[in-house]
Length: 231
Image 1 (cartoon, rainbow, N blue to C red):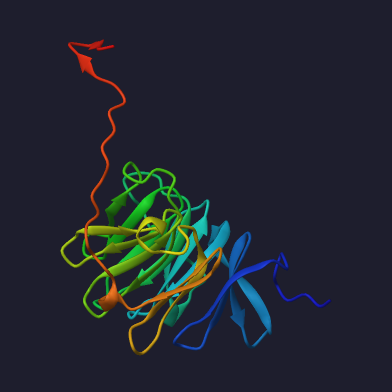
Image 2: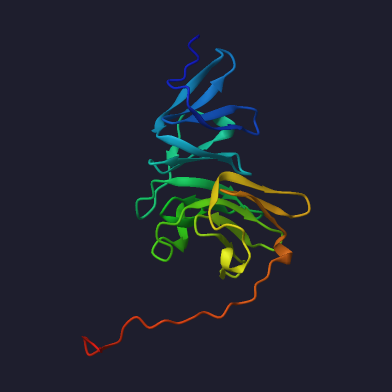
């Protein structure tokens, strides 16, 4: 076929920005479609598996990669350059970027936890630590009208409420499955939230969720006294 400017035929992500530009991510690069030449132009300083493309209310395009971290560029004056978002530790696998109702940017990762970006300090605040949830994949993030963030993960559904309290929902308290999936979320006009899973679609109304605490069973696996195990 004709030369369209792409180095691969594997298209992973795509977005049309508010200014009308078409940006696509492949398994190796990020491209901007140029209408005049009818070709795609490669962003110069970003490479990797482009997994997530999100435009925020300020016209910033957030680019999440699987292996190369998080980037940001301005959709109103796309210069084919993207700027790397730094953090005090290496976060390479970005699964999703989401802007909530009050303009905060949430960043989900594969195995590195959940973060919230603060533009004032140009830093990412850790919301869910990878130490507390080792190996967890953050799939999608949606916030409701009450200011709660709902996060689909590989461990089940997590609610991070407006006070910073975390509630976990899993098969043990009503979910049909604990394993959700990438790039599959939606919220309708009535506020019902939909997440895609490995066994179909999970839908719920946040105001109807049951937050009753469950009694936990405690098991003793060993007893130590002065660095000696008690038989």
